[in-house]
Length: 76
Image (cartoon, rainbow, N blue to C red; front, side, top):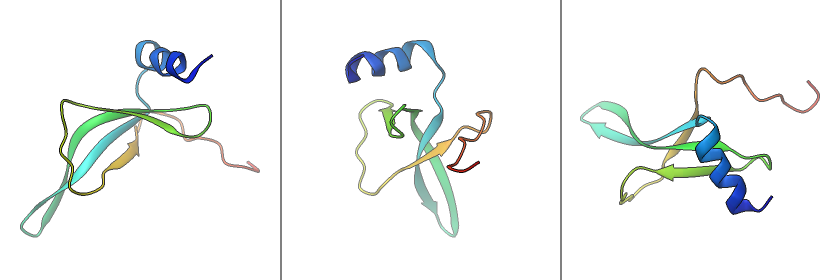
């Protein structure tokens, strides 16, 4: 299966495994704004789909969804 086909099947057949957020500062308080979603790939990478047209001047974070089981680690 090609990468493009794999990506298309991820978007159409499964729920995202991660949420994509950027940090937003408001005085002393730090929040995270939702800017997209991501799917964990078989090769360990992420396919990231951002909402709309994003202008990012800093990095962003991909947090695992809480309802997804944790990925097994080597040796466990």
